[in-house]
Length: 176
View 1 (cartoon, rainbow, N blue to C red):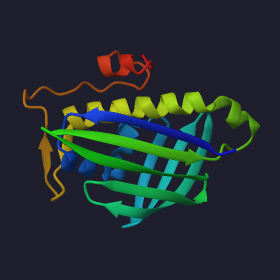
View 2 (cartoon, helix red, strand yellow):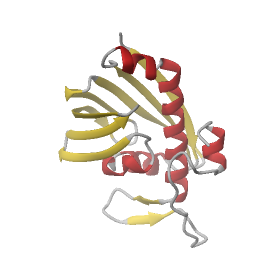
View 3 (spheres, rainbow, N blue to C red):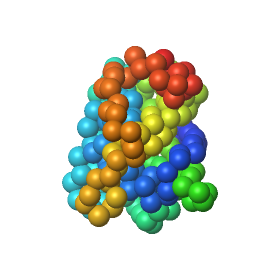
């Protein structure tokens, strides 16, 4: 049974900032629950390691389509079966709509029960909320090898464990 999830979020950064941050795949563990490591193997291949519902999963994915500031699509080539795309829409005024489409095959009955589609959608929404907080507050790559900070006050965001953060973005996602 294929599970399909579609979620979107508005981020208050220009489309190039959102896209450039999303392409920093090795940063994904900082805002995606359950993802423990992403390794870039080549320009179009990634290795993922995740702990999902107490199950350690590893897979490789190939980037099938990449249009700067517009879209990234991928599909697993070995390991966990999944595919998806993220699209970026410039809304003007330094705002971007980020839409995530994901398909995956649960591995066995236990995973299917634990990862009921509504729970997967909730996790995807929570991860997008974390991405929003990350890209709006943290440092981000400018696409030219330099890092710029969106935090103009100079204050540093405290490190928090996932699931224990009481920030408004996290609480609104239902993960507090």
